[in-house]
Length: 200
Image (tube, rainbow, N blue to C red):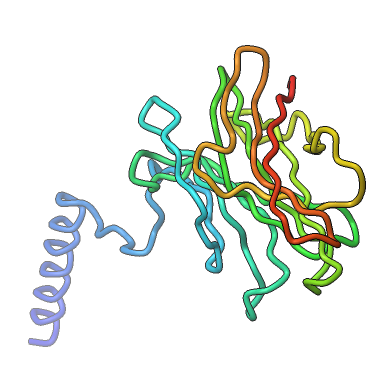
């Protein structure tokens, strides 16, 4: 009797094994998909300043990333699809040593390059802070920095603070890029306009 029971159990086990083999073993639900595509990560504290369509269904998105207190901002740029999703790459942009903070505010495309306007602050104290502008030339495929040029206000007589607020303060020109904005001397309250063309 016992042998008959063992034989039946063995036969049932073989039959079940055959069913599993015929239909395939169940997939591990947590296994990564081999066809998935890795995408760049955008920092949690990224603050967007502008998103500019650069053609081919892509946007250049600029802004800054600060610390937990929203201070010590560092410029950041990324290239994404038209809805700012499907991020192709993201890149933090360095600032000069001993500067307080910076932010990327404008972006334009020319051929296979992106030109990004970065606005820097030299100090956290308003009385001693000077605003400084730089234009960075980035490769469009991976964000590598090709050039970093300081924007010098033409005919400025002494130390000043400069900034750019309007959407079109960074524009393409036939022979380079134009930056325009306002500047102010530290001992005056008048805001003076400027524009300069950088050949990059």
